[in-house]
Each structure stands twice: as structure tokens, then as C-alpha cells.
Length: 367
Ligand code: G6P
Image (cartoon, rainbow, N blue to C red; front, side, top):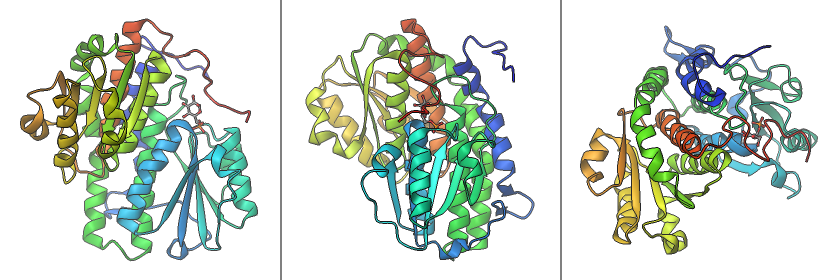
């Protein structure tokens, strides 16, 4: 299948811009808007009987799984184990009957994830996969196939596959919550309405592209960059750091905002930009106090938040990126956009090969 860049300079840019459309496309198969219900494909096991979920993946797909852990535990109150596939395979995980093992993969071919799937199957787990390539090995070996409809992703650094994975995982969390009796019809209606808003929120985030491009020259000279977030924004901080290092070759680390004082704060000076991902909400004040610890040590902060958050805490920042005000459930989907665009524009400013970064492969089919 021939995929063209169209008007875009890079596939990655095109794929970032496709997100509202492909996320909407993906959500269409998991939401019944008229009935205000979430829906999964047919399955021959009982979701209500799932006692524990084990989520396994690599790279960006792992961070989608990490966001899902917050959702599954918060909404469905089901305990979740989470592991990168290369660790899971060899750590002799305890997998009890009644467990669901959930694998997340764009390609469906990543060697470690596929081997982890086979290990979980041999240990008697029910196998669910969130995968973008419906003909892939993982898709064929699943008991429950949860496709993402991102279309072919060409840029090595994953963008649209990631947000489509988040959309499927959010819908899955809601299904699990309903099956477990943790969500009534009104709550389900609210979740369906919020998820349906995600593409519009992503469009509003894309409208910040020029402002983000203007920030890129402030980040491009840095040798190290830190990303901070709390709750589901913690995996977004990890994903932001991964995107930046993948395509711009700047060393970047994501940290749980509250953990910063246990190490990375020693790195803070005016040469280490700190990207703070903090939508307003219950965790906002906590993250802002960590941000102020950075500022008190001369650290330069780029705050990604909504108008309310920026009004409350943006004045001493090097720069701010104003996001639409979104429900906490869809914040990771919306906040993925500025994080991707920032990495993209920094890489373009540095002149690296955005779509084919050195040493990286789109699909890692060897161990
Ligand atoms: C490679 C790619 C990443 C991707 C990871 C997992 O490292 O460069 O973008 O996130 O593999 O791939 P998967 O196809 O399993 O999602």
C-alpha cells in the first residue's frame, strides 16, 4: 500500500495531524453513541470474571498500557500488573487463573511482546490484544482482538497509533467497569460523551502548532530535558521524553512529578528545560508545587495546561502551551498532541531525520 505525505513535510507530521480523524474512526467501533454505551467486539469469556489484568508491551505502546493501568484501576477497580515485554518474559510472573493478559502493539509483530503473549497463553491467561495491524501475528493469536484504526503508520516514532490505543483502552476500561458493576448508566453516558469529545480536543491542541513551533528553538540547544507529570500524566511525561530522544537525540527523562525531589532535582539549572504536563484538576496543585521547586532552583519551565492552569501558575514560566479544558479521562489523548509536536519541531530545528531516526526500527522483530 502506497502512503503519501501529501502537504506535509514528514510522515510524522502527517500522522500527528491525522489523529482527530483516526481516533474518531477508532472510537466509532467502540462507542454506541445513540444508546450512550461503550461496546466491545464479541468475546467468548466473561469480562465480569476477570480478576486481574496484566498489561504487557514495548516502547510507546507500553506507555499507552501505563495510562490504561490508571483507568482500569480507577474505573473498574480491577488490579493491574504492568510490564515491558522483555522483562515480563523472564521474570517468572505469577499468573493466576481468571487473569486477562492484555498486549498492546502497533505492529502486532514485536518479538518480545509476541513471546510474552505466548508465555501468558501457556500459563492459562485469556489473551486480549490492542493492535493496529489486523493481519499480524498477535491479532491471529488473540482471544479478544481490539483493533485500532490508525491506518498505516510510517514514521518510526509512533504517534497516531498511540492515541488510537488510548481510545481503545479507555473504552475497554469502561466496559470492564460496567461488567464489574462499577459504572451505572449515567456514568457510562458521561464517559461516552467525553470520549466522543476527544477528536475535537485534539483538533484544538493542533491549533497550537505555531505556538509550539516557536518554543522549539528554546529547547533545541539543550543537552538534557526533563518531563514531569502526575497520575495518567506521568506516563505522558515518559512518552514525551521518549519522543524527544527518539527523533531529536536530546537526552530526555520523564519523571513522576513528586519523585523529582528524590534525584533529578539535582540536575536542575537554567540549561535543563523542564516540560510540565499539568491539566487543571485534582492533581494540579501538587504538580505545580513540584514545578515551583524547579523554578526556585533556576529551572526553566514549559507548562502545558489549560487556561485556568496557566492563569494560576504560568507567570514565571519560560513558555506555556495552552490546551483546551478537557475531562481527565481524555486528557492523555489531547495532551499527546503538544508533546508530539514539541518533539517534532525540536527535531526539525536540529535537522535530524524525523521519519527514520538513527538506530531505530519501526518494528523490532528480533529479541
Ligand atoms: C519500536 C518503535 C516504537 C514502538 C515500539 C513498539 O521501538 O520504534 O515506535 O513503540 O517498537 O512497537 P509495537 O509495534 O509493538 O507497538
